[in-house]
Image: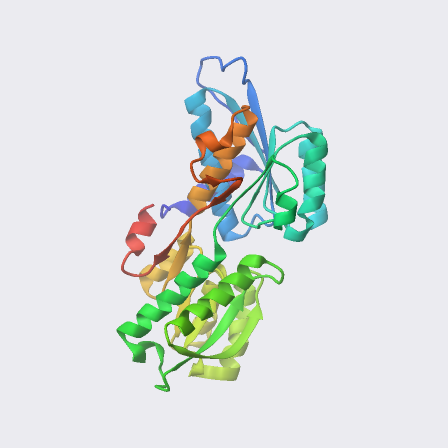
Length: 347
């Protein structure tokens, strides 16, 4: 991830205008068999920081392949704005216009069957990402794929960040000296499997390390920084400096917690996130975020694109995407703390 990500993302958003055509200007003629590939992508919310990084890396991958293979690749990216009905309509548009493949970051993972029905009827492959459909839906057709990461792994790594801090200096985490960690938990949206599993495995990891915990509060902030800031502000009013750790299911909410502490003008507790978004990495660098877990947006985007490109060109994705396990890609995570944040920023 580069430090100038914000400028790059703005340029990409301007170029896309929700309809990105990545046209080749190489001066030579494309392969007659592949004059154009059309990929449709619908996002649950385009303003989600992590999803935006996946989108941007996907566009970069398409541009690189277009230049390398001398083929025009049209990428139409649409924002469902958190509305499943809007997303269904966007899928209808892609299918009716004969797109080669659709990529879907679902608003509601339990509603994937509707999209699958539509894709099967049109015989157009679908790649789901970041929000895993239920396994029964994924087994319905051999042209369905999923790209994501294991939420239990990210939860364990988030827990281990705090375990490592505690082992190195218990008093730095356990500020009241009772040899228990008083914590609050900022959770993603209800019904999202990653939110539930990250929450579960974060705490399981502390308990497995013989660290006692005391949950002061937990609440949903829907992955959003502003909501997390508001909820954390209420917890600060209620618990004051009794909060020793703020666990957050993603970085945006962790940054919202930091915002609340800054506004209250009291010392920050240990705050940890998940995703390793560029703003979060800067927060790790400046010491306000104790750590995060890299959710490989670039790797996920590359895998999504490679599967889409293989399907659009009539190839077997298993031959070009080595990470595929059946029809799933699980990208590994990595802990990021002050010790290795510069490496993460340089990616």
